[in-house]
Image 1 (tube, rainbow, N blue to C red):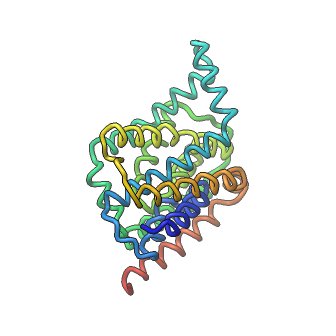
Image 2: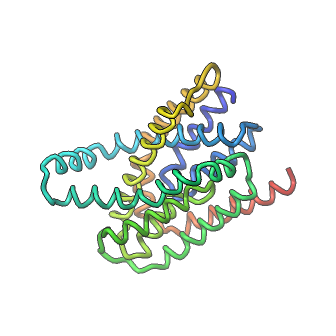
Length: 264
């Protein structure tokens, strides 16, 4: 992969991670359009590295929340920070199990299969549409709701299903208000991404050399800074705008992707 292509894909990741439009789906579409012929395993590694960059930008943007969580945990009391951390752990279980037992099957979807991405974008559009019709309430994230939201996050490991779209939509359908839903959605993915990177490093799967390292580094930096610039604005946009707007966007892009797959 060329460095310029990696930077462009990094910017796409940084901009789309915080909107419910599937950053992994857009990365796969971008790689297909740019003619990236990476094998599925390498393609998935590139996607994970860029997600790690936006996870770091999420930590920077939510640094006060992250600090409060750690501060509360080290008080060793049953407080709101401890409860929130437990909910994060519960939400991680489904995706962690999928990543642990079905990693090879998951890799097969990350090889430029834009027709599949197109159909998954349409699924995302449907989730956003139904969430937009849900009534607003002031419910919080409970352990039970955290597990259901975690199942949505596991589904979103497929390219084309928006992680933020699936988790925020599920939260809203369950009655959680958009502010709490957005905060929980963006914080719950951070431990998973860091854990995935750590696993790949210690297992030797992320043993990169030469141009691949340079391209990944360039993409990482681009995604990190794009995420920093876009995160606050995009999170506000998710909370204040109707999800149906994003549903229409995903429907259009999904249809284009499916049409492109037949003509390419």
